[in-house]
Length: 628
Image (cartoon, rainbow, N blue to C red; front, side):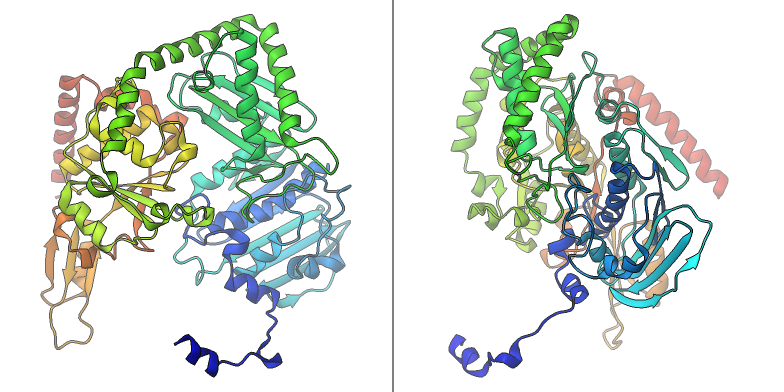
């Protein structure tokens, strides 16, 4: 077959093609913005486009121009207006549409910028169905309008009374970002990070002001879901800022940034911080603590400014740079020297804080030693149990031990109840990237228990081993953990028990956006008139969708109510776990009052919960009767 293809194909000078810049971006968007997505995940492409535009405004602020940035988002259109110097008017079109054109190659002016290659704005242009950019400089204004990277209109320079700055408006191309929708909570987090990293900057998002006086200290206070055990330690240098404290929770929690970019996957700067911070604390107390005990419950943020940073992908989620600047110190040494001196000095000057830190470390050490024997046995048990045959049906990516980080971003694991549901999913899943873990019965209610239960309970022990999170989520084998339970009372209970388990022992899995709920249809509405070419099946996730489907499929449609995942055939199930599967991300924020919620819903206050259910059931019945 290959010989036949070779004979019929031509490879001549006429075969060679040069793609226009915008055509190349549109054909290979993943090279520039990562995944496309529809806005349901904070790293989806529409947020990357918005960030690329805001980054340019942040660079202007960093250079001392423009203390306010206005961001307005409606259902489809995004608009960013800064008050910087404005793009030079005669270069406006080039800066928006010619690759590798910009002012950031001069490291004197932009030595610590995120985007140094002039690509970001062009990617926004090429991937938008409408892109309008306006620049104001010293009383003069120029505007250009594009569609999918093609210049539609270039207006003449006119006089204006508007203040200096650049306004960028764009509508992402819906043919690429299918049925996309902006989520305000993701944009708000993006904007908060900007102001935390740029004290004195004000960003107005849809009329609401965001600003910060205390930088990373404000960031930790905002993002922590537990109260700090001692005042936040806040350390600042010329090109580095660090904030840290301990809280009563399992696991470690980090927020890392390079030149304002949120490096969600960490990198050389975060690795250096974690290593040296633990060593410095160990040496300060002069005790033989294990690093895991020192870092248990640690919440920290680090921001570093690097000359011409090198990231491991265009989306800049992991720092790959080894050195701070050309012929300068390594990042590991720069971060290490700063942490060693400043953290050690701080602990010597704040003895009360040091004592509170010591208490937390000793508590972690005590608990670890108490379950050391159980842990060893659990590890051996997990190795003996054939996960691949009994509990875990792994994906080929991991079975082949692939090192491809981009493919790992696509991996997911479905946690199912019972053999019937896991069997359906296993049969129709994408075997390359989707794994299935089958629960046996209802998980234990882990609320109020210590981590000892993770190793003593067979289901939890094997689930932890399958996810590879015993030593932290850096070893997490799957990007998405998808809870797939029936849409009934038992399924909801199992869902709550699993979320309780993650909140109790691995909260960073939820905070980092790895845990999801699979939404499966409640109804199937179909028209069985075989003689009709338009006969079709509609899957409905709500009562409202069912009503619309009945209207659409008149007359006499057949309606099926799915009681469990096991009732859905594998052939049908493939429609619900493919590219367009519906996922609800489990989120965790400070104002969620998680401790109180878990205590009420998962604690031992059975009568209080029962009365709450009865009272609210009566209220709901009254409301329904009034409507009728």
